[in-house]
Length: 102
Image 1 (cartoon, rainbow, N blue to C red):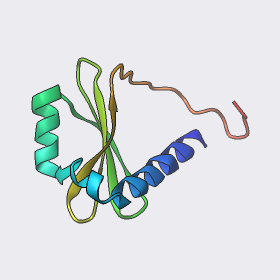
Image 2: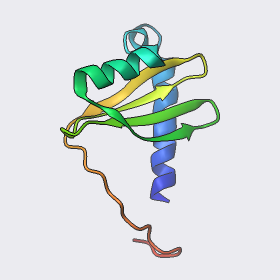
Image 3: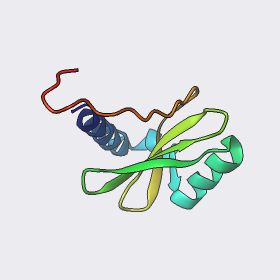
Image 4: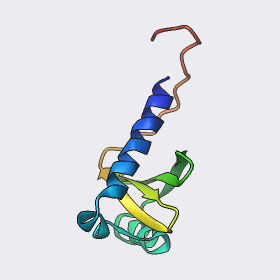
């Protein structure tokens, strides 16, 4: 349930972000350029990815210094920055059993 809600929120965020016109243009670019800049400037590499709806790919880039960036790549090839920050911590938690409200 939490995973589904998280995926939906990322999908809605991607849609909202993608519909912004003037401001989004400064936060988007060709995927190869954006990925290279994340690697060169922040030492970030892709650590996860998923589909947002049927038209966008959401990716998480993380560095060894625990900085992180979430991007969305649109069907036209543009990759846009959705969020970034510090203090990334990878978790490997088991999902609660079905029917468990926890």
